[in-house]
Structures are given as C-alpha cells and as structure tokens.
Image 1 (cartoon, one colour):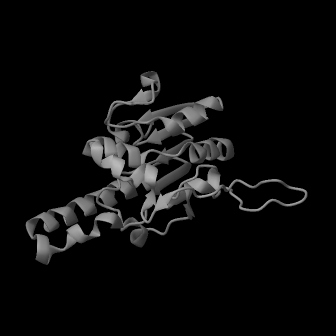
Image 2 (cartoon, rainbow, N blue to C red; image 1 turned 30 degrees about the vertical axis):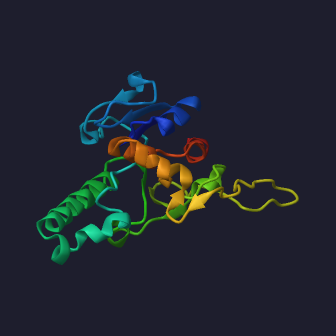
Image 3 (tube, one colour; image 1 turned 120 degrees about the vertical axis):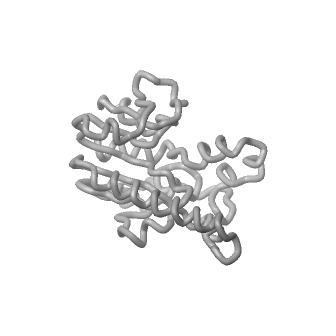
Length: 211
C-alpha cells in the first residue's frame, strides 16, 4: 500500500508503516529527523498529494487552531496582533479542509482540541495511554474511509485485547515529557517538534490496524 504521512518530519508513523512492508513516505517543508531522507519529500504536501496514494495520515499544523493559544485572539487587548492571528487561523482552517478533501480514498487527520472541530466534527478522541505510552495528550482524529482505532481498557476471559496502560506522571496540560519545565531549556522550534511528535504506540496502532 502507498502511504503518505503529511506534515511529518519525525518519520515516526512513516517508519511504523515501513516496518509492516508498506511503501510509506513522510512529507514536510522541514528536513526529516527520522534518519531516512530517502523516504521523505521535503516540500509542500500539495505538490505530492496527487501521486496515487492509498492512504494519507496528516498532521496539519495546529499553532493557530488549538485552544491553547485562545487568549491571543482577544482583539481588544492585543489589537493588530490578534487581528493577524485570526487571519492565520482562517488560513490554517483552509489548509486543514484542503487536506481533508484530498483525492485519496483513506484519510486520517489529527489535531488537538481547537477551532477546527467547530468546522468539521471529529470521528474519535484518543490518548497515548490508550496504546501503551504512559502519557495523556488529547488528540482528535478525522477519518475518511477508515475505522476508528481500536483500543480497550478491559481484558475478558476469552479475548485478551487490553491496550490501555497507567497514565503516568502528568500535569494538567499533558505529560511532564511534553509540558514539563525542562522544555523551557530548548528552543521554540525544538519544543514545537517535541510536542507535535506522534507517540510510538499510536503510530504502531495505525500501521497494524489500517495497514
């Protein structure tokens, strides 16, 4: 299966599908950090979106979509900066919808809670601890042509399918890994990469269930 992982520089999901034998490629305007540039398109995703993909998993930028920065949209307080941010939010919504309406049979787009869910209803909400990583990070999925990712907090007598683990040490906005004070010691760009990276358990579930 030909799989496009859009807006991914870490190659976490790309490598999970490659491990299952699929022809997967990541695509991002940034250089990939996953160690396989031969599996990476460093360019605008819409320049490669028509290359005959069977499945696309997309990570549209959430900077101007997430509720985390909602205070910066207050025009009475922040004036022109807030007006500009509203414009960038509208552009981010257009980008998301353009990806969602791409000519690909199977599509998954992910984003945190934010403005886009008021425009188009998400299919599923997941956390990393649903799939084996001891961390909370509420993630919404928009699915087309795909079933929701299976996960279970229970074990039955005849069917052992428990995938949930203990949540681990967390703060109110997510895990200490993503939001802890240590993240203030790295650059803004590196912080954004860390917080946007897909957890391995979720990547593996995508490859196993949708591959």
